[in-house]
Length: 628
Image 1 (cartoon, rainbow, N blue to C red):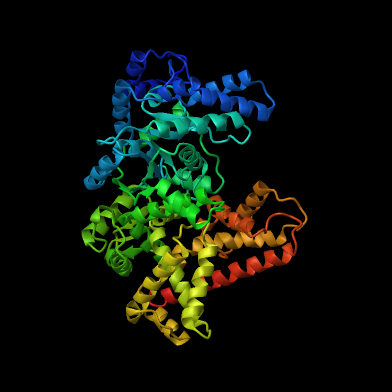
Image 2: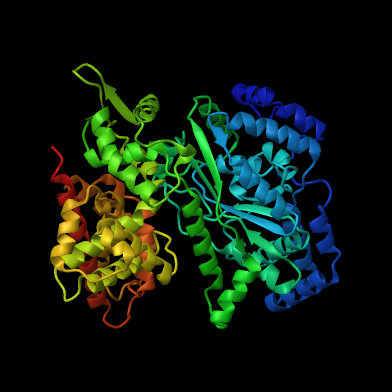
C-alpha cells in the first residue's frame, strides 16, 4: 500500500473514511484494476452460453480473426465490466459517499419513491440522469437505495481510480470505455453484457449526456447505452423496461468554476487519487441542497411500437426516444432560487438592492406560477427572506459581492464570476425557452405580414428548427400548444380560442409585457452561433474541414468579438456553445467541402443568424426601456 500512497494527506483521507481497512477486508493489495476475483452472474452466464459463443464465432468471421482469440478478448472485456453488489462493500461505499456528498442535503419526494417501488416489481427500471456534477454518480444511486432494487451505475472508465474501484465494482459500478470506435469486440461485449442484465431484470443508471454539462443546461444526449438497451428488447421479446428520467439540480456546486474554464478550452484535470482527494476536501464547505426529481416514465417497448407503427422504416428511433427522455428530464427539473437570483443580476449587469432584485424576479415568478413550472423545495421566489438568504449564500461562495457601506446593501456579480452565475442561471433556462421563442415570434409579427398569427407561427417553427441541437422540444403538435399558451399570456383573449391579430397588436403586447426574456435566455447561444456562421463563410469551400482547427479559430475570434463588445458577454465564447451550432451546420450540409452552392448556403446561414440576433437585440432594447 505504501508505494501506491506516497502522500500523507492521501493516506489520511483513506484512514478517515475507513477505506484502507475496507480494502484489507476485501483482500486488496496493490492491484490497480479492481477486477473481481470471480465472474459475476452475467459474465458467467454469457461465457457458458452457446448462443453467445456462436455470436463470437460470427464476429470473428466478420473480422477475419481466429474465434478463440476473439473469445478471449471478449471475456477480458466482460470481466473488465463485471460488477456486483456485496453487502460489506455497499455499506462501506455508502459511508464514504455520504462523506463525499456532505456539502449538500439531498431532497427527495417520498411519494415518487413509493411509486418507483411499485414499478420495480414488474420490469427493469432504466434511470438516465442529468449530469451537472461528479456527485451525480453518488447522489442518484443513493436516492435509488430506498426500497428499490439495487441499480448498476454505468460510469466512465476515467473514474476507474485505484483503490476506490475495488469498492465501486462491488457496489454496482460498471466501468465503460468512452472511445470504442476502433474496438468492435468491446462494443459486442458491452452490448451482450447489457442485454444479459436486462434479461436478468437488473436496474441500470447512467448519464444521458455522457459527461458533465459545462454550461448548466442539459447537453445533447449520447445514444450508445440506449441503443444497446433497445437492441436487447428487440432480441428478447419477453423483456420489459421502463425509462424513468432523473433530474438532479444543486443550489451551488464547488466544481462550476473549473467546468466553465474547460468550456473555454482549458485542459481537463485527469481523475486520479490526488484529484479525488482535492474534490473530496472541497466538499467541506456547505453548499445548500441537491434536488432530485423523477420525470414521467416512458414504457420503452410500448413507445418503440408506437414509433415503428407510425413509420416502420423510421431510422431515428433511438434518437427520438433519447430526445424525449431529455425533454422529460427538463420538465421535471425545478427552478432554484439561485437560478432566478443569478438571472436577475445578469440581466441588470450592475449592483442592485434587495428591492431591485425582487422587482426583477417578481414578473418571472408570476410567469413560472402561471405556467405551473416546478420550484425547488416549493420556495417562494418573491419572499424577501428567501432571496436575501440566497444573495448571502452566493456572497459566501464568491459568486456575488455585497457592499453595505452606503445607504442600502447592494449586490453584484463578482468580477470573473459571470460564467459561474450563467451556469446557475442556465439550470432553469429550459423553462423560459418557450417564452423567449414566443417573444421573437411576436416581434416577427410586429414587423409586418398579412397575418400576425401566421407570421408568428412560421417564426416560432423556424426557431424550433434552428435551436433543436441546443434545446429539447416536444413534437410539433405539442410545441404549437405551448406557443398557444404563451400567446394567451400575452393576450388573455386568446385563451378562449386562437384568433388572428395585427402587427400593431403584437407590438402593443410586447411593449406592455412586464417580462421579456429572449435576450437573457437565447442571446448567449445565438451569439455563439453567430461566431460559427461567420467563420464558416470564410472557410474555403473546397478545403477539407478540420473540426478542431475550426473550433480553435472560433475561440480566438470569439474572444476578439467579446473584447469589441460584438458579443453581449464572454459566456458565448465556449466550446459547449460552438459545438451545437456546428452540429446544426452539419445537419444543413454546410461543412462537407465540394457540395453544390456551398458558399451561398453558408452566406444564407450567416444572414439568418444575423437577422435572429438583431431581433434578440431589439427585445433587449424593449426590456431596458423601463430600467433606470
